[in-house]
Image (cartoon, rainbow, N blue to C red):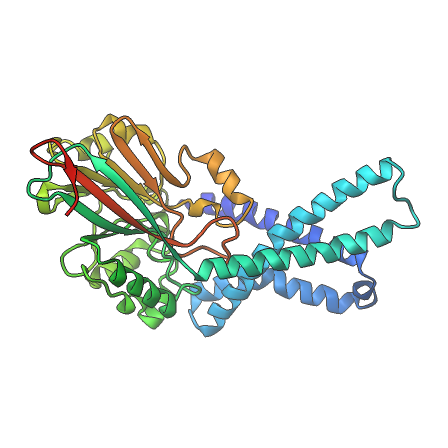
Length: 391
């Protein structure tokens, strides 16, 4: 990303962030008498909470430490409250306006309405955030069974464990990666695929604890492949990618590899590689030139854009992540509008598409609109007799 583009992007984000916080601050001050009586303490406390995430990210970039981890965690929860506080307070303003027009409330009871609107906003937000936190730390295994109408030689079936968006860093740390390793061990897959955003961004928090040392899996030596996500480039690909590869993880960077049964894996560079790193990824058609279309073709592409390209080029299965399925309600409805497939399964022609909500998360450790998950994909191939069987 060019410097001026970063400045414009940062200015827009900071403006939206600031306006949302100012709105919540003013609603609290205008609704709660205790805040009015302790104006300085309220202002100072609110400012510290609202700026925690920003301070955490700045400190993380300069010198990763336990303090920057704590600031990021607190700031993440504040961001979740900022979302729900803004939405529910805005809703209460709309309801309040309608009730005033209808004559239900007036000058004598408007303060009571504002007070209880604010209190209810706090209660509902707390419930959503607490429930979303529990949802985020209890991952599930999402299973899919598909048939690819091609032969894989003697191989009749394949069990793939796929994991997207781990986001190792200040928030997702040793305990989470150990839990992931335990899940993969129990699944006993034939192949493990990491679908990008292994690292959250800045590599400092990962290197400080050497977090990938805790990633163990039954196929780490000969059945583990990965691709880059946008976050591998955001934090500096020159450090992030070599670190991941130093742990024995084969990252496919606009490359293909043939595995057992003649199955071809194609891993694409993330589409943001040019924006953050200046690296232009190859067109899918160029990557497919040497592909044997009589054998199964599996495409790994972090961001699920341009799904028609996979169908057009004869891909049998595309695996993606990136969307987090919105992560927090109601953002899951927004991502559903942004992507042709923001989560789950879709088939177009002979091409199967699966988009994962991801194992980790970004920002708030809250999943109120989706689940943390590991994919288990069972693929059946056509035998010489023309039937699909699984071993």
